[in-house]
Image (cartoon, helix red, strand yellow):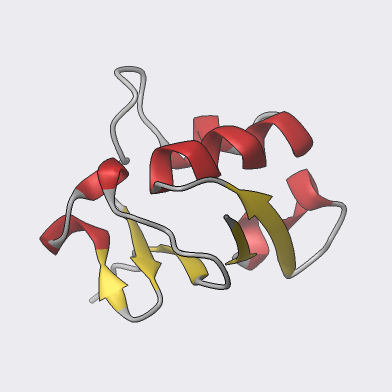
Length: 91
């Protein structure tokens, strides 16, 4: 399955400045693995040392927050949009 991944500004150095890239995979885990194969190091910014989504990174498949779906097992149908959004804190 081919999906479009929206890359936040802070991660664009890994994608050569591209705001959107394509990746392949039937689940979010597969998409992130493919993304890292093509843009080495990006998965390390999205996943922690145990291979889980980092606490302060939000990921959406289409408009669905994967934390309320199947996490890394969330299906990524052909043509889906995946958005990686770093959480912003402040006060």
